[in-house]
Image: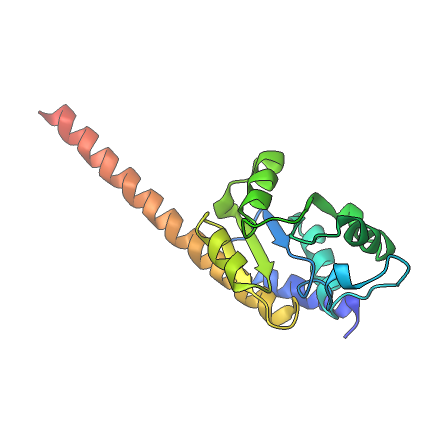
Length: 188
């Protein structure tokens, strides 16, 4: 399936959900591409997973920002590969550095740079430990088994939309309670 077909299908999937994230964050190794940067040479020509570029382009066309959170110990190679693939300029934030924090530092930096709340972000990664720690920050996080693909996109957008719907209902419930309590105070 070519990039354009993937992009069109991704756009259709996006049209089916009630809420879209303001920012979608991707890991690099084994999420956007099928290798570890540190095992490669800058001279090589990298390849993305088959659906990755179409999904990135669909988000950009929908006006959804994309970012990178990678714990790669070789950011120079990662950046070279992003340039070679012609996608480096797509990302509003690129946090590529080695860390023991399971990406919480990456997300704090992304949050500071973009001012987008964690609950308005969607994250794709191939490691459970990153998914667990970032989820605790309030980010909807999806574990990918074999790179980001249309199935992971569908799951991610569905989970994100459900999370947003329930937070909207909770917010409306709190507003009703606060209105009731303020109206009962004025009746007294």
